Length: 305
Image 1: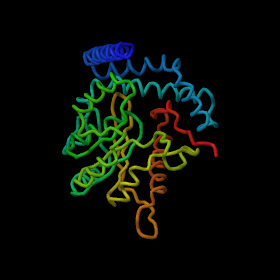
Image 2: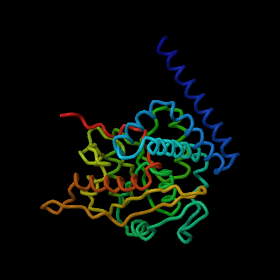
Image 3: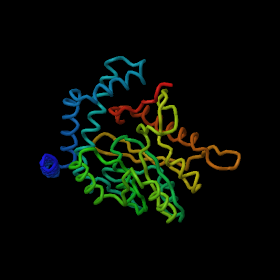
């Protein structure tokens, strides 16, 4: 009986969360993208400092940028909260934010740089891989790929809250291509997709307990080697892609040339070195726009020997 009541309470809470999020999104749609984005950013700039993740972020910033003043790090922290607040508010507008197509690569909202690399992957008839990090509004990458006709499967980690996860999945399903949740059975599904000639996109800038050791932002970390392992197995092109938030509500999506990875004596891609190269690419991106990265997560959790 107690378990039944607990399940009923959980379902009721999930229903309330879903209703609340839908209501917020409805209001944001009415306000318009620019206004709702600004409000989301302002709210987190003010209230982000009162949540536990703020301490994690400030510790990360102090460890990575000890040479910066406290005031400079505080400014970066406020900028990171602002960016995250805007990303949250922009979910309500994802279906209208990518205003480019294959013939018009610069729109009023989004511009694409490195389009030749993107189209080469799209049109070569081979599987391909894309990596990125939580920079700018990272969700626009999959939306852009879908709009430009790339058969891309986006690998994602669902939010912990089931109600929010449900809403986010609905939005992603309407605006992106295929989706693959990380977890049990995901690896085989990725292999099957690549064998069919599809493409995979993955954010690789978060901690993975069973990851490979890398250096990130000058500190030891553990990184997800999945893309490097898939690149080794399929010997297919691997590109980086990032989103930069620009002034006046605009974004730039940049696609890198194909990565050149070190290989072992048998000619196979070295997984650890490839993972490090991709991580170093994201490192450079974060250093260029540090206030647009997700500093709130515990990225550096290398066990002490």
